[in-house]
Length: 180
Image 1 (spheres, rainbow, N blue to C red):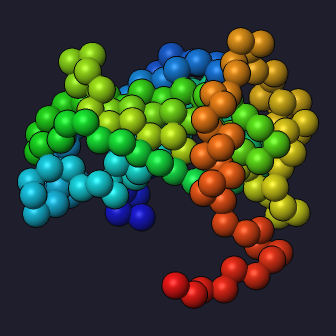
Image 2: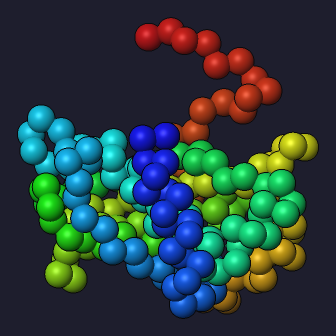
């Protein structure tokens, strides 16, 4: 919750920005704050995932999906994440968070997110998300019926299928004992 004030501000300001389709790419301008950096004086690696949350919220609000989800009692949750870093974001640096949906499969909706400075990628992440309700995961049929069908050319890259399999933990209905 360390980004609660930024999140609330973003939720308010996103409503005033031009609308987008959930299947479009969104962009949010940000600046590295003192609370974002670590002892090495650059953005903390964990902070990237926190600011990427803001990018996904912006896309959901601007597309109207956030309001639809809230009405139905759906909540987004991260199911898996991977990130690669190229350059450091330092204190005071302006950057944008670029967000788009890569595609979906029977298990998740996959977002690609980037931090970009002067049209150059500094970091890139892929986040597997799910929508859940009080009764469990929301099906793709419900998602598509609510948000609309994805564009026909939206094809999930093959490597993501393997990444999902290789990084999956057991279902919550199965044991996952801890043993090194």
